[in-house]
Amino acid sequence: MTVTMGKNKAKDLKKSSTVSDHHSPVTPTGAVQGGLPPLVTVGVLVSLVAILFKILTRDDFCTIDSTKNIIQDGHKLLQDIVEKNSYYHAKFLVPNTIVQFDGILNDEEITYMKDYLERRHFGASKTMDKQAHTINAMRTSQTAWCVNECMTNPAVVALEEKIAAITSIPAANYEHLQFLKYEGNGKEYYKEHTDHIIAQTETGPGPRILTFFFYLSEVDAGETLFPTYNLKVSPKAGRAILWLNTLSENILERHPGTRHEALPVEGGTKYAGNVWIHLRNYRGAFQSGCHK
Image (cartoon, rainbow, N blue to C red; front, side):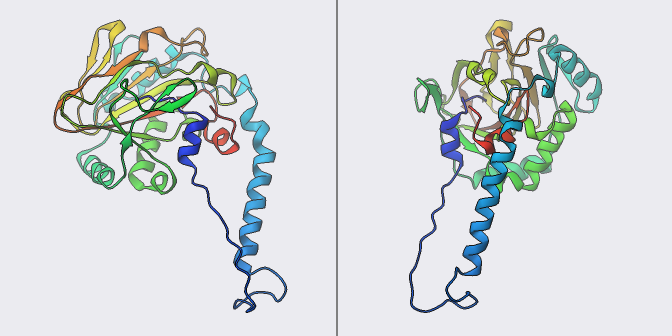
């Protein structure tokens, strides 16, 4: 559900690569005498193009430009979403604030995604503590970020396309999908928190205006609790909930009512995931290094 994703996340997600120079008296096959091998030349060119791209696009993604806000009125957005998504049984759990869907993924898609997750590496979830991501008692679940080859997995691509169709907000505004795993031992949970990060209001992509949270399994307990509304949402395979993290009348300000927590799972394994949706283009800002 939430873990503050900032520059520390960038360190977790971006794998550094190193190129070693091997000095040899023998010219490699296909290399130009006295020059660099073709593959090295191509690699250098690709790196230069990437650097140039960052320079040319940095202002586009890193400058705060309210004309690029994806929405102006959060309540109106959710009302439209409920009206247009009867196929997924869209309904308000809290008027103008929290929406529930069922059947977001069918049985085949759920089985495929769960099998895919079983092969991924889950690590201890982290939370933000004094501007650093740390493992602590507030959050004891397991997390796997969907980056690199995961982003091109057919099931992931299809899911993001569904979310874009449901919300009318493009994937460019999404943070990387985060998969979650809670073992049914009564010891894995995430205590009350908010997904809104104040520091993000002063960045190009702006704050997380919406959270799209989906479930891939049905378990004993393990509900998503919204204390302000005394609302518990039970995990069910194919179910999803969408909520506002900011106020409709002030799209930058934190919504006090959507603080939430993941209650301990008492039986079974809870597989779930979330996508945080930003006010403006997040993925471009992430590539440019100006996200938080």
